[in-house]
Image (cartoon, rainbow, N blue to C red; front, side, top):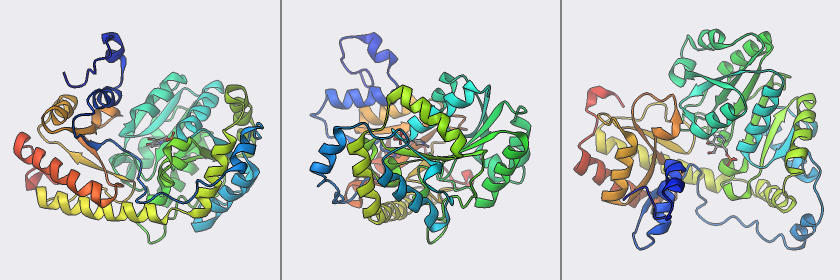
Amino acid sequence: MIGTADTGNTSVAASLTPLQRRLAEVAAHPEHSWTMLLENVPVWPTRPPVDDLGRAAETAALYYPGSFGDPELLTALAYRERTAGRLAVAEDHLLVTHGGLHAAGLVFRELSARGVRRLVCQTPLLGSIADLALASGLDVKPVSTELLIGDDGPRAVAEALLPSTSAVYLNSPHNPTGHVLAADRIAELLALAEERGCHLVLDAVYDDFDFTAAVPAGAPLEPSPSLVVLNSFSKNYGAPGLRIGWLCADPVLLARLAVRLEYEVIAVSGPGQRLATRLLAHGNEGLRQTVRDGRAAVARWWEELTGGRLAGFSGGTQAWLPLPGVTDDELFADRLMRDHGIVAVTSHSYVGDRGAHLRLPVGLPLPVLEPALHRLGRALRATYSLLPSDDQGV
Ligand SMILES: Cc1ncc(COP(=O)(O)O)c(C=O)c1O
């Protein structure tokens, strides 16, 4: 049966996430030609030339790196943040982490230890971020992206904040909808957080995929004791296996996070940090071009399929496809897998979504993406007859 790989242990299968179940199913049946639409990271069209580290990586493996990060990487990250109008930070505002989720976990646990009890979150919210917040002792209070970007956004956030025991979590460009929050809206919410004595955590792991401007502007904010920006090599540099991310925050908060990082993992992989420094120097234009091409292909495909346009599709590396008429999105995804060999992620992996959706990666090279779109289009059209009519305004 789809979604329950033969592990010989049903309780193992039952406790896996839907995504893990599907991956186990794929691994158990390599004889099938699966169409994999799972990625939420962009994929390099050709491998970036950064893997000739040789002795530098070997040497880095023989010592503990500093708990704030490798000095060369910190310098390169400070430069990245200062250019293109991002945060004007120096090295002392940076902490290297084991990826974006580790960065979020460090911050959530620290906030919780300080008595914060509520995280006001932009939704749809990636389920693993919600789980991490809950496991850190924070209640998740959802505020929809639609509400957040509208005139009532700041009021909605203000009403959701408990005085001094809350924090705000924003994600821009947003996973999964692709919405890019306007810089002045983020600044407005930061001012609100400052006024209330709260932290604002900005998850900027897709900030090089802001297609609302010719040059991605990130969040052109001034450093503030209330502001924490988290970022990662997984998405912006297409290197999820590297497990390197970073935090930009006030040095006083970072010092506490570095102590936490030290007693949890001592330090972040030295060879990984060397590779990350190379990747930063190489840049990510090839990856951004792949995402631009993928977005154009997906927009064309969706228009041909439905006659409609995807709302809020202005950044990020995925499209959020509405599935009108679907009540059980996981059953739908299981059928897509069983009947069409298409392996995909749905709104089930998110908290606070309205209506069923399918998440489509747009950062795949065209030779991979286009045949996949063709198969998905055929499956949506022929089997499920769920295409939205014009008045459903996709
Ligand atoms: C919105 C968002 N934040 C953070 C992360 C964490 O990324 P990583 O831990 O791979 O750096 C992800 C990964 O899917 C994400 O989508």
